[in-house]
Length: 400
Image 1 (cartoon, rainbow, N blue to C red):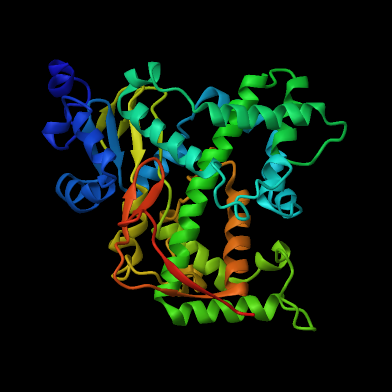
Image 2: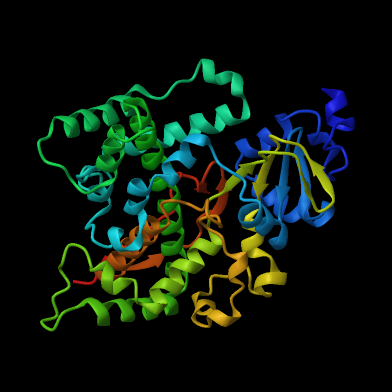
């Protein structure tokens, strides 16, 4: 262990020496959710764009190197993910044209709403958050996998959906049906793999998108001039000639063409992205450093999205207007859904959800910030907020 830490193949990659011996140090940073701040304000400024932060883990913060990893080298994800990605029948579900035909997120994924909004005490959100925490701990301490299994509630919940769909005589146009249909194809998914993939959609998609949505709403509440501009654009586009704004969900075909709405969402994704990483599938050289096979390569997306040399002196500020002049935006420094052919398969799905939710809230309500709250951002698998009650409050007032 000591030999690999200080004399192994990664020994020339700079970084805090205390992190080379064990993953415990970086695990502690991950547990308290402040790893991104530690990287942003201490590690990268001191050690540079390629940094070693664990025995077999490096972090990349440079635009050109990130492009090399994501686009040029196209480092792979898991074999199962790649098999899904290359299945053309499955992949068509995530095209913009298909997504825009689907009415609501619950219908799109599993053929029916979970009714979480109407039922505020539904156990599903808490179970999903619990599963996220379990994965955080297991990623840091792999031996826990023998003791910490998936919550039985989630297993039963997803199995019930799958069983109900298999027994149904009619087929629906949604993610679950696409997954089930692959069973009849060569190399298709087993029932367990369908269940596993459904859990992935439920956890990864809902948590990351909800965080970006929440933070965008909070930023709008702190910037009433930007909220007013967005509200004006949405209402002028969606309210019909009779002044009726009581439709359940706005038309996504209209929303996707609204410039300021898209600018607001892009700015939310820039400042409050999810995180992702890759694994070296073969030995490679990055910025002159030898990186052996199976090294974890983390992309420092928070740094890339907030670095002043790319975004200017106002890089930490919420300014949707920057996106209204595309020629001034460093789009190669904007990768909320990764980049290259292995980018996020749910990209169009996420964009639709963000547009629908934010536009609906702006159409129905006015909201104001409640001062004096702690809005510190913490990052675990995805990101969250730190506040005394674990929630950040925004005052909503109906427009009707």
